[in-house]
Amino acid sequence: MGLSLILFLAGEASELSHSLCKLIVTLGDHSNTYLATNVTSQQPVAGSPHTRSQLVQSFLRLLLGYTGLHGYFGVDEEESEMTLGFWYLFQESLWSVEYDEGDDERGSVPPADVEESNRLALVNAVYVELVRILRGKVAWPPQNILSGWPKGGSFEIRMRPALTLVGAG
Picture 1 (cartoon, rainbow, N blue to C red):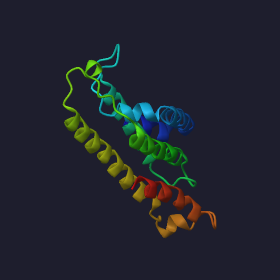
Picture 2 (spheres, one colour):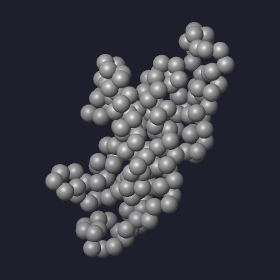
Picture 3 (cartoon, rainbow, N blue to C red):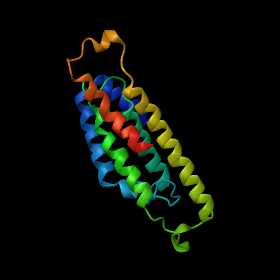
């Protein structure tokens, strides 16, 4: 549902989509440590049939959807560029987060080594998808599209996702 909502908003009401993207990015920037900590948490969310990991992963898919919006940021869309700072902060949080290994909150979850393996596999899949998206964003457009861009600005337009791509590697 998240990606279809983005595509609808991006195509039908770009101002609304832009505002939603700003809200999601701000929430992600503010909560990146929480997201990193709970990316594979099997703890239920109070009042919801979902686990923390399900909600965090849905949030990450939503951000990936905005990161991969069709078009060229700086030219015909701005939302994909707005997400780039989040991915850097999220990566930093993943490296520095300390996962709770206490038995009282874990309930019936797999042993720590299995959980760590699952966490690494999931995070790897997210960043593989991010790199795939960013590689597409840094590719030069066909000449007929490039010729309509302002002179001198195309290099800067391509550099922003390239720098994020280097940081994600």
